[in-house]
Image 1 (cartoon, rainbow, N blue to C red):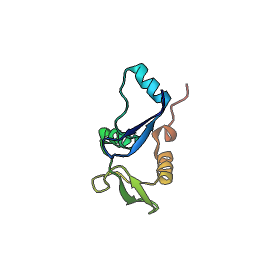
Image 2 (cartoon, one colour):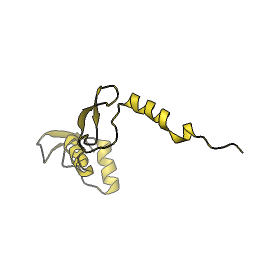
Image 3 (cartoon, helix red, strand yellow):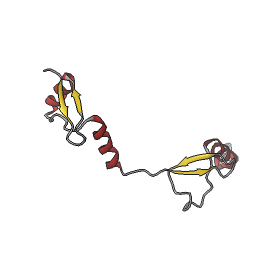
Image 4 (cartoon, helix red, strand yellow):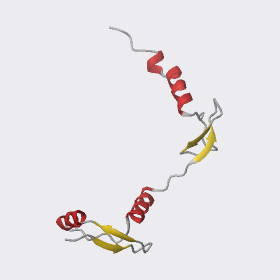
Length: 102
């Protein structure tokens, strides 16, 4: 088999399907892809459900950070990675109240 040039059904760009890919698809009984890799990746991401990111500031140091939840609806403090790690070490019940020794 030779490499195949296929036109994407979504964006009309041409993309290459390598000989090894064609052999793999044929062994699995699958058809050649009809969309280019970029359009396939976009489709996969859309199937996951879109993730919305929000810009906000760390409530301890004030640095700008990006979070995956809406700061307007969250009641817990929002920290950057460094401040969160410090907060967790200071407030971790396992570290501050270890198990008694036998």
